[in-house]
Amino acid sequence: MSLSSAAPDALLDDLRARVRGRVLSPHDPDYDAARRVAAGHVDRRPAAIVRVRDAADVATVIEVARESGLPLAVRSGGHSGEGHGVVEAGLVIDLRDMKAMDLDVPGRTGWFETGLTAGEVTTALAEHGLAVGFGDTGSVGIGGITLGGGAGYLVRKHGLTIDSLLAAELVTADGRLVLVDADHEPDLFWAIRGGGGNFGVATRFRFRLVELPSFVGGMLVLPATPAVVAGFMAAAEAAPEELSAIANVMPCPPLPFVAEAHHGETVVFAFMGYAGEAAAGMAALQPFRELVAPYADLTRPMPYPEMYTDEEAGDGPPLMIAARSLFVDHLDVAGADAIVTALAAIEAPLRAVQLRVVDGAAARVPAEATAYAHRANRIMTIVVASYLTLEERSGRQAWADALADRLDQGLPGIYVNFLSGEGPGRIRAAYPGPTLDRLAAIKARYDPTNLFRGNENIAPAPAAPA
Image 1 (cartoon, rainbow, N blue to C red):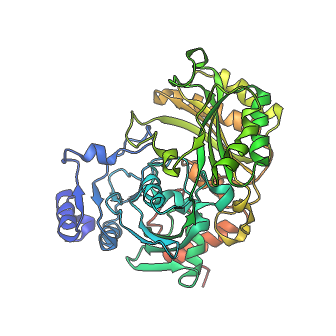
Image 2 (cartoon, rainbow, N blue to C red; image 1 turned 60 degrees about the vertical axis):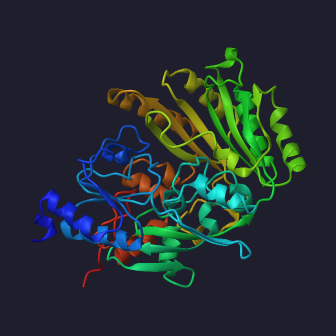
Image 3 (cartoon, rainbow, N blue to C red; image 1 turned 90 degrees about the vertical axis):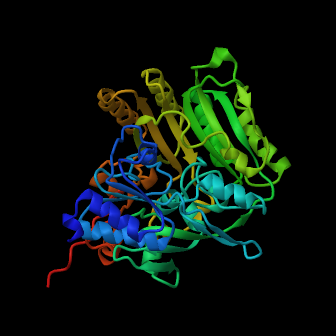
């Protein structure tokens, strides 16, 4: 009997007989927890979730998906905006049990399995005074953030996550485990640095590790007048490259360290990170403090992993979010006023505009060196609004689109990890110019049937006419 005609129970039995990891079906008590992803509007029920143990398990699930015709999803941390880590009536390769690390501390490199989270890797490396720059959320899996690019608290000093990637092990659509680096499958190595999960399942990454013996970071909360928002972004661009700031312009949550009178007021809720010595870091933060008297200043010398300790996956219900992302070159007072005004005009439980400067080391990498082609774009921006019912979604999306259009300065490009199933036009924006054409050609070589389509998808280039 072929797998394409197999009953669900027969397919599950086949998987259980062939993989080392656990196979979850809809009958298992922890199935619902396992299929949950961060995107709250997603409620997909896969036929099976395979908690793979190794690359051989990954290859087996790929083979079953290929032979059965079932759709396939790959999950690392489950944080994609469109819930790409879960699929309806298909198979999920769940990497969360693959958490091995192999560190070469003297050589400043390490291999990391892709079920690890950014927080787990950061905590382990900090014991040796080392780091890799990931994003701003510790519970994000290193698989998705790395394949898309990765911009966080070390981006201006040490570049994107992909700029530290030395090699990967990838299981391709035909079930082969391949080593991918500058000397082995160099086209594929170029593609996975920004091209997302279109080309195979990454099971391990080898990173260059940077020394980070001291760090200054924490939260800074400022009242968000247009002048303060514009001044904050100007200070972030003018700061030493050791300092990376992520500014969230949003209503102030009911935080215990902010006076109750300011709860609900529009603020700049910023996460600051200085990759260097304490005295220099505190001095670099001073221009931000001088913009206006802070409502709260929790910045201090700290171990780098503490930037991630206040959030964990699974805290609270998943959020339903409408979003629109773009790059801008600068933010003047008029643009800041548009943000503050728009935030006051909507009653979404969560509404925010996030702004992060991605120049410095990230901008010095040639645009053609990786599939992330936006090296000249300075400020990564995302507009978000939450909703409580699916009926509210279109209105929230219209609000996000309108504000993004108001901020748009005509810069090409979108950061692929901020997309959420927005269609081919936005894929072309994520991979502008010849980038998408090259990616499509590589896709045609490694995944000609588009098995790996549960992502911000790059279709294989059509075969040339005979």
